[in-house]
Length: 81
Image (cartoon, rainbow, N blue to C red; front, side, top):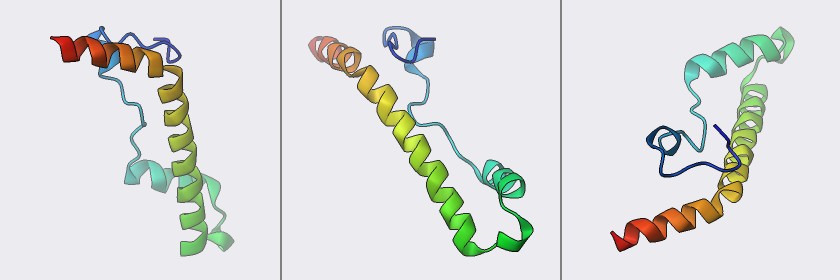
């Protein structure tokens, strides 16, 4: 799949997430791997969460920008139907 040129007429590609899911299991794994014991507190966990969330949002914005022409074209096509 080409994330820079998503085919919105293809069911599989159209069904892909623009913003990747993020669950508690992944968050806890990341905390375990990336935050030292001496830094394990609410402030550090919040900082880590915000960094990850901002990174995911920026990736989603990039995918959106790269596919905006495709999105507009498909929306217009579906509006006519």
